[in-house]
Length: 189
Image 1 (cartoon, helix red, strand yellow):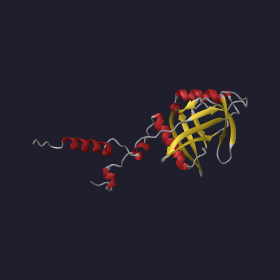
Image 2: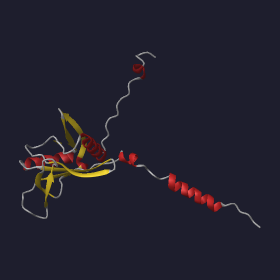
Image 3: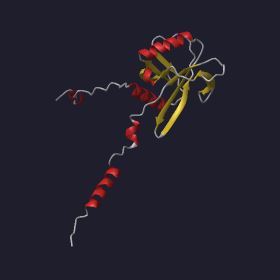
Image 4: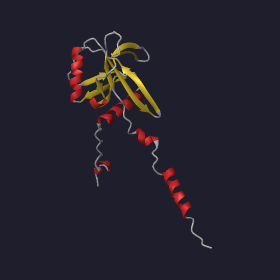
């Protein structure tokens, strides 16, 4: 009678351990890498066509806007984005790259008194939102490449959106400098 060690069971046990313990990534670590989309559409004439769509922007006081279906700006046109405090309120400020600056200047100078319809898809926690954020009226030619508006979002959502836009743009905020070690000890070593 020949007795062999139970090699098969050891291999099965190792495979099960790899499946259960290895290769899994928890949601919180993924949430740091979440990007947000940006779509900026131009208001179109009210003529129904396959190239236009009617949308409702702003949840509390809806504005109905007929837009061109194809956006002229997206997250690849972002250089950096930030939330800017303005008294008790805040605005989103998007600085565009060279291509985005050119497009924004062209569209804003040739379409006065029309609106931009701004949409974003972003993740907050386990929820994914796809929302029209704003429909600012084009008042002047925008030549500095900065698109700023008050969003239909709360402050936490605005921070999430901006982080997602910056992640999509590859923008990294400068790291804060640490205080010198001797400054922590009152200047003495």
